[in-house]
Image (cartoon, rainbow over all chains, first blue to last red; front, side, top):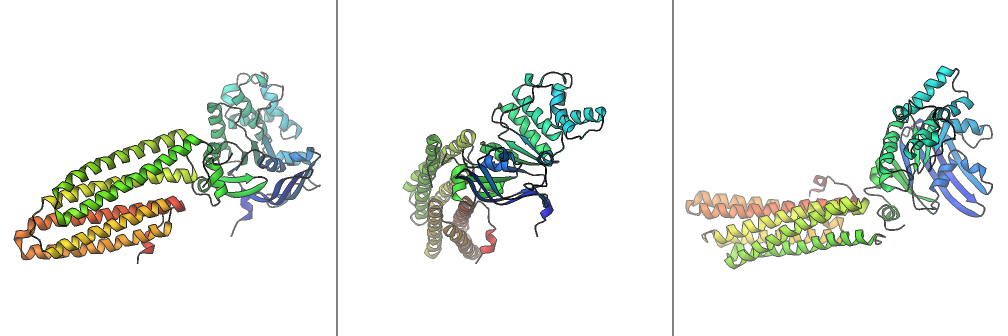
Length: 257
Length: 224
């Protein structure tokens, strides 16, 4: 029997429309706790749209209509009117394709979230939280002597790790990543991938990636989308050795773009 | 299956398939000639078999190098990865079959003709069964036919039985007639080579099943 408590998020009957255009067509996906799930598929397949449904990022797009159930930890309906959006964002963090630090100091970037969510009760607690988040993001040693420097002066890879530190500073349960390495060089990418592997001990990670090799390296589960449909999902090792669907095989082997 | 969007990758995978196919034809020819040698002891075949064996060795190296490059440059996954993995392992099995053909034909040509014709007939029949098994398993490989591969794996069990029966007959004969011990031993080695070729065919069958299903199956369960 499947233990429902092992899923950080369960989605069912998900439909997304932009105006009259269907972007997601009846998708059901479950995300196991403390695992990394990759969403893959060609451009326009709906993977980013689906990811953005998971922390209600699509709410700000007027023409976007989201239907279906999104249940976190088997109890919380994330689309419930009773759940303030700030509380949801506290539980589900997000890292974007392009590093987007605030034009503030390195310290302030990480401290901002805990401050507005009232997570730290004293300055020393906030200092510890900033330090711990930077540590977890694998950035502390590189920036410890210049925490007051402006964050935009960091390299692209460092900025992205800072964004991850910012995301984890509010102690979310789920981290969504939308192509987090596409603007980074291979070394910075390797650092982020190492980090993802470490972070899964404490967080559930859902990552959209165009890189098939990245999906195979970092995730334990993979879901393949095409034209708004979920074609196949399963263990990453199975998807990349013997997928059940020919369409999946064709995509991951490069037989269609 | 659709073609790759990357034409270079597609042509490299096609090259691997083509090389395996040509290699299998050479191996079958080698085995056919080697089986003929058991009865004919025709030394003319020996040179041909040696030269075919060199071709088989070259094919094995070519497949290995091509697979290595594809793994390095194209990082295949799913059906492509299984093809490369299968090609590497199957080409090695084929190369071993080629070695056995060379060895058994040398033994056949250089052994005395002092055994009873029935024994030679039995050995020739074993050779023909093995040739047919090898042909069948190559067919299953290129047709991607899992059931045929399973059938080939089962047929190797019959080859094993036939080998044991010939071994017993030869040992009995040698116990009764010491003068045939030398040629009897040679023919035991010939039978052993044929039995080993059957094992290599069964190994290929396992690779064919993996190539299609993505899993190594416990074939002991399908023993008859």
